[in-house]
Image (cartoon, rainbow, N blue to C red; front, side):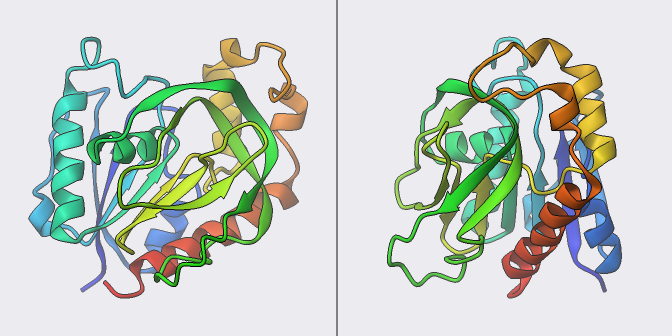
Length: 233
């Protein structure tokens, strides 16, 4: 039987990107929750991998998006039962919040292609070294997270100090995007063009849409990260 995976979608224009191809290649049994429709949450005891994607809302907007409370509770349950969990952008912030850390406005909006560098904390956990030392990745965020207690800081960028963390060698939170394809970048540009207010770390549409090689490079790393995260499942 293939890997049993479930993913959370928060906006119709933010799908799985290259993760979908990776899941297909693994013969995974995939289900999903679409929070912008009628959210039906899975049984966390029945999952091997939970993937939490991005979205335009803040984890702090529970009054506007009341399903955020139940989503965070389920994420916490999945983490504490030992499920492999990957959070991307909003998904990473939701993991941080579920683990009791603060999510807050970042000093800068960071939108486009900017490098992240790995943080060598001298640890020897299974997820340490999961990211290249430096890598130009795709960003689209205005908020960031504090590091949850017991987590390990994995990456930073010039605009944002906390770009990634690991928790108990089966939970990975990435503020940036490795799964983005040209099609998913185009969907973001078309749906969130109002975010493109000129700033130090906000690029033009032309630069954001990048080149095929840029997307291929990060998608290869995304596959490698998923392999490592699910290796022991």
